[in-house]
Image 1: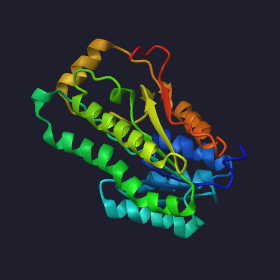
Image 2 (image 1 turned 60 degrees about the horizontal axis):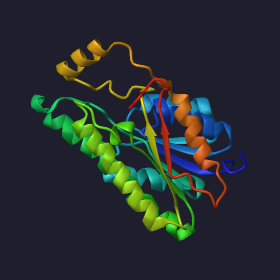
Image 3 (image 1 turned 180 degrees about the vertical axis):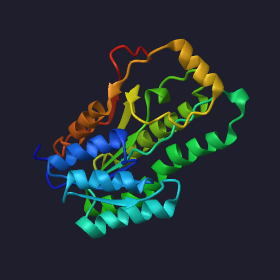
Length: 243
């Protein structure tokens, strides 16, 4: 993995799941990883398991000043940022008639604004350096809407549009990758409060998922490409998942 060794990679939403698994893989391959998330105790444990190639800063992507500080910390620590992965996301899905306005706003703040804050903070640095790679996590729900996912799908569809616009504007300058994970075994969705969603899921029965490690492998693949190759989109889902 010669194109990963020595790269500085910043990951938001890194305390568990896809972000944590990817940080471990990248650190083992010689990348220097800077991890951001809200849960300091999990970040402590994760950085300790990776070793000298890892640092962290407790941060909340809904606060622009936190995102700015995280990226400045990465530059101050390692001298540059090669890759930013806007990975933080929440999924408290519900039906519209339940009127969970605060949860809708939370998804907009984390899933959309968090991505925009990351792009805003890192893009000048990457343009000045003449290279860089911005990755953001959308979802297969950003490609297909289901009952109860209306707002969540809207936020992930927004990520799709943001990243495609960024790709077109930055062609020849900055690499841009959008991830579309399907059902992955992570903590995403642990914040669901909707009774109707729980009833729907119970009726559906066991849902096939893939391990977060599969997403980590996809991210490593995208980052490891030579300078002249950009992997713009990756859709990855369980074999059994039709939509």
